[in-house]
Length: 315
Length: 227
Image (cartoon, rainbow over all chains, first blue to last red; front, side):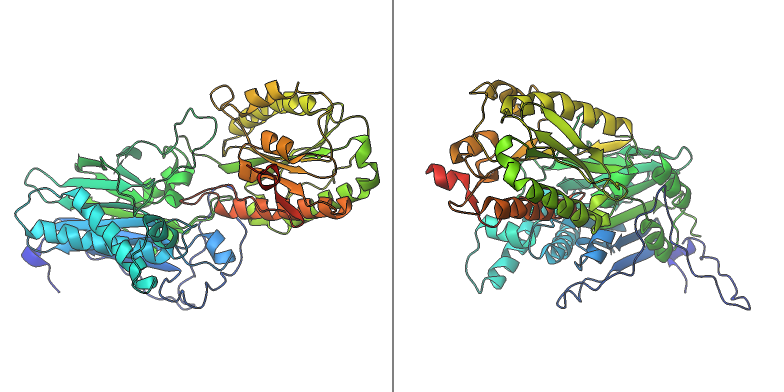
């Protein structure tokens, strides 16, 4: 296979299988690990939400990886992964569009809400990019995702028009959606968020994480805040931002399962990911890495990363 | 937000040790044992909790200091004595909770808003003196670590008092009239364990929230007040 214009990333290196076969991957631990146990199955109708998902590909200008893993809490208490991520390339512009969602655990089917919010927002962003708009219209993206949740709820309620509280009770989810556009002067990311998931630019040479949104908890606050306003509520104004990706920088989008152990990024978790994300790793390795074990951090984790090709040299 | 070791929920159990609880001392002890064992059976939840057990009557005495129940081996011992001084409770919490939160933060943890489970079998014997420290304790502007308070009344404790003590009216419960007090104590600890386990599961998620289960044989105090 050849990349268009022949300027794709280098192929991932391969290793020959030794006499005893490759060693199995050991669980990555950070600090004190959490309890080790065999994951229990989620409910019988949760078969559409596998424990782990990952994806990875490159365009001529950008490399994408994402992984989403079920947290220890859900593996133990037989609940499905309630995080989701999706990504696509807009073929005529080369933009990479993406969405990351974290289903609210108190909602009855937030795992489906998260997936559908990702699907709907990506569909709308692709639609907008195919029009004559040079920027994404995020309120329209968010409303489209909220409308998808409402439609789902109406179907679930056998055609009865659902109240917003009923939609939230079934499918409430946070959402970060956006795109990385290819520009002659370098890739530019534009992103919106509803809820408390995070976005950063990781500067690989320094290992520093520059947050693109404010922290969900004031660092000086004595107790952490529990307040999240997820979809189907669409805030007005909608929180959004943009960032240029310079050489050596990586755009990261993560749910709070990643954000909480990361903190400022200046500890062990930040160091681990800065080291492994200096170049796009195999998608399966990102999933394995993201599944690190650390005491008390047992939520689902999702991490999506986009590298400009000046940064990317696939391993 | 520097890297944290985890996000913890500090939980305080305030057990009435006044003389009128004398006949139910064993029920209190059994309830505390079942609470400790219930949390040990849920190590993933227990990892995110720190439990303190405080006995109160004329004063407040520590039966279990803020403890990690995965590793704590001692069981709290209750001691029946004195009157039912609510003022002593809220004065104590006013000093204790901010200090505990600072200590946990110093240990590298972030902290959820603490929760107090208050069990009393009588009306306060300090008149209305408890209202001032209670108001200060529960005012988030004055006390940033102000706890959520769940209040359960048994015996002579009145519904309207539990509604005043609890920080939300749906956090106030009283035993149904005629309920055996020993059984009510046992049900309080069952509900307390279930509430902590459910809250622990809901922590570190997109919707961390305090889950409060109504103890069996209890009603919402607000229903008894008739508001």
